[in-house]
Image (cartoon, rainbow, N blue to C red):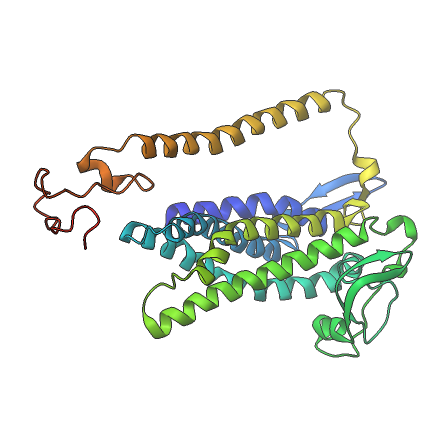
Length: 344
């Protein structure tokens, strides 16, 4: 429990900085200079509770689905032992419980953005002009003010923003062109991707939950395990798409309605060097994190472990069963039948 609390508080500390960029508060600005600061108001700004809850749930979903996806691959390969079943069930259950909460939290946050960052919301939903009965666009590419290859649901955006088709939704025409996000199509498609993957993961969790409720066992058919194996990738993609919406959607502001990105660019000459070192470091970490487990897995498959260690190796080859002429099996394992190694 202390680790969980520390992790949540750590996430809040990191997200609070980004929240402040979206909802700056806790300071007094006079003649272009900050004259006083209230740290509590800075930390607990209007966006902090929404972004923290959204990010913590996303972290649990990503961690749970990524780990579950690894064991789903093992189950697909026929490894139906207790180790793999538990390895899949525990993280998948955790992520599955977070999925419906995330869907609800996302709906609440979208409504918050519509009221506090209306231009960002307009970019997310392709609302060019302030209007009522605003349609909801699913997919589509914005070219010269027109949406192509998208599906429009009449008045649904107004319903989502204010529970009524007559809700007034502010468009990006409410601000000068210089204060509008430049990459509207990227923002909208990232938002659609995040929402679509979120509902996909929710449906996947509901599927397993329904099966468990009626059958009291894991669903291990290929129809379920294949999307479950991809759930980790989907969760990561949804999280990254969400960050694209948050950061690109705030453009051209680095601090909303306070400082432009162009005014925040540092003149320091050491930035390219620092960036290069960070990229190189993370490239090494990526290779090591992926390469070492692959090498270990390959070694385990080529060099079978000792019999007493076989059950401790998740992806090692299954222990060889004794043949009729071979040495007797361990007392805990029944002797092989006369049918040979492939017998029942």
